[in-house]
Length: 458
Image (cartoon, rainbow, N blue to C red; front, side, top):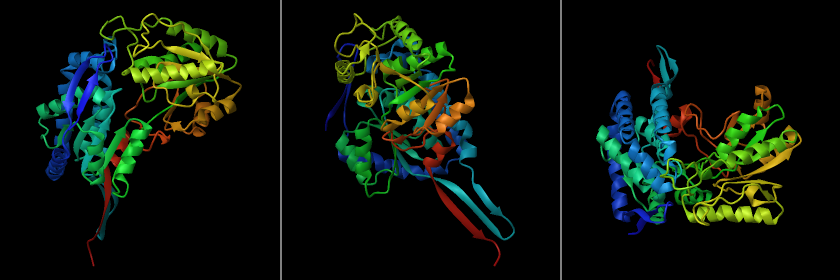
């Protein structure tokens, strides 16, 4: 039995620690979830929806706690108010579309035949949630999985270990049976053993590329569906006809918000050469208005990264780029301690020979390059092993759609970025992984089709 510790990025202290479940207890939890699933699925859809909505409302009654604990656990400044807005939006949207998304597909209903396709719950859904948006990423799968008739076992990241516990408390308070939604603390070995033993019918993992590969290896030969949302190196492209000020404000916020620790954060920007110098000037001026500091201070706009080792990776990428000829435009902030507190940085003179433009940074840094035209921008945006989102800034919606059709990405944005629309499918390609979250397609992923071919007359 191992210990899971949340080390607060504020001061390096142990904020919370929990013992992991021994394998036998973890197996028992999965077995309880499997036994509970048929009765849960037999409940009317409206009842399952009501219980999930009640749990969401219960979380809403503790937002003050959410805000403070997120600051302690992963460093997000309290001025941003936690995650309940997005958490509620996603859950409520999935509740609202459930009846239509899960409805039977009628092929024929005649005097001779009934032919239809029903959606059956997968069974036991295992959700492995990340720390960077711990409430919102968890609810993306937890809410529709439960509404669709699955039971759910949640394993939350060590950095935000309290979030899983609070979600379990909220669902229990709302009346969801304890075996239907369980929060567990597991080590990697136990997690892999459960997956390999077919303890789950569907695995949803959000995290690193190596973590996703470990999930797929554990599931090899079991035919358990594994849905992954992994790394990203999301690009922004500013065309010559773009409205420059909103492009600067939104793309730089998309690169720096949450200390750059966003799955779909902007990590590289390509600007038409006619706008390039002005874009860089405005971007640097904006970043220099940020206040790096303790996330519990209401004046802080940029908190520490979640762990010093994450900041060290970013510092290493920056140092490598500078050694290769890049230019850093932001002087070190006085609050930069060489640890988790990291100066936000804008780099120019970068190229795709540098890790800063190829490898995931997941921190408050962005490289900016000038481009001649759409063709060069498309080539550079596609020159990545990742494919989650891409952001195009233009006054021409037709051009954005034409460019988007040629991009290797899961989502194409025009004149916005770093946003998850629950009405659209959250998905990716290449090393970002394969999955289909939220939207109608999210329900299709969390259920399986069952066909009925009923002959009425002989």
